[in-house]
Length: 219
Figure 1 (tube, rainbow, N blue to C red):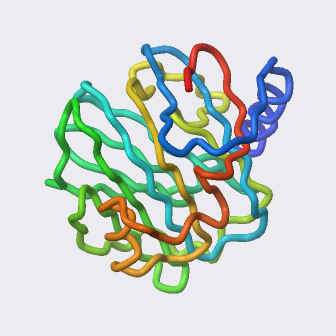
Figure 2: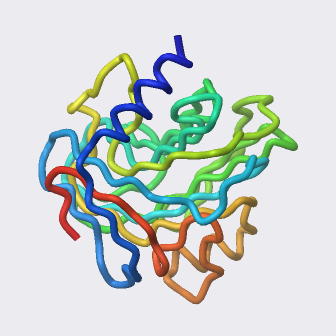
């Protein structure tokens, strides 16, 4: 069933009339202005089997409901690494076919929030950082890797044959999206959180980004 979903997703994405760009988005944000089926596809600079992941981004929204932020789909699964929020409840990380929730993390409506998620296949542990505060580490899966090639989208997840759920689409602004194929140190994550000089993502780099936009997403 999931293989069929992957095939359908690839067919749909291949048939869409999308506009491609490659640019430095420093100081800019992607604006998702309404609850719809917006999509921004990020093109990874590295396509290999990932055994560890760190993704960091900043988001701004006035909503207090479930919202999809980031989804990376692998050769084996849609939404192999997914970051989402369900405010005012939790921040969530999905790896493989398993989901973990982290409660009582700091979050502010109508303000910029910094959100990082990590996963390490060596331990099976995942962790989130929100606005400078880290969660406890939690076990999520015994998956050994996220097999390439990968597809990465912002503002929604990939639903395949289940269809799109507008009630979980992101409405607001996203910026400073970076992805690494390793687990960053606490010092490196704090440097990102504080807007200091930090090592830019080697998989996705907001300052050297190839992306494709669909519908009414505005830069």
